[in-house]
Image (tube, rainbow, N blue to C red; front, side, top):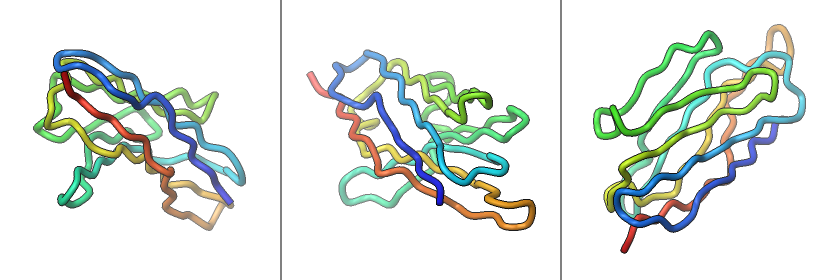
Length: 120
């Protein structure tokens, strides 16, 4: 199996920054696309940012210019640098990864989530 462990969430004031990390471990043959999603209370889970194994990225319009996704393939880790945070960024952030566990088997895996709260 594959485990995704997130870290870096917490409480931050408006305008502040946080950096989330997500490390993948387990039966990994190949780590494909990775991404960050978030879910605020009463809302559906939404894509925040994603990055392919080759480094191509895409972002939700609401975070463009403020958030940066990156990955370290040697460490099987994806990061989300979040700047200029505001109250609308408050949510549980989930790491997602598409993982090939063998040459022919691929699965979609989720982390347990980390809370990000933006408040003064």
